[in-house]
Length: 119
Image (cartoon, rainbow, N blue to C red; front, side, top):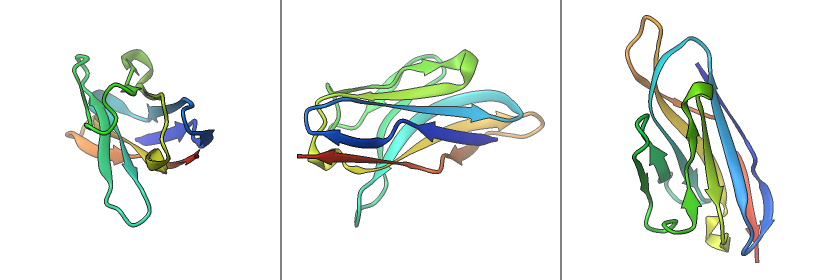
């Protein structure tokens, strides 16, 4: 199983960004998918998550500025971020709880994509 992210880059403060993450491989079932971020010198933190049924949760710091759509048929999760702030600058990681064929559920991570917000 592999997670591949795309969509990071340099964005001006107040702008918007959309990240994508697609899971591929021998996937039987996908449970929760989400996005985490890690800023320099800080611990990795949850940004947003979405369960296969559609329920979501968001970090307080991004509520109202962020949505996390998901396409179950494509095993793809997105992160739409608006009104970006300098403090949103971080490496963003995709995470998914996946059961490959013949195995139980496990956590998988993408390689990370850099988001830099310039003020």
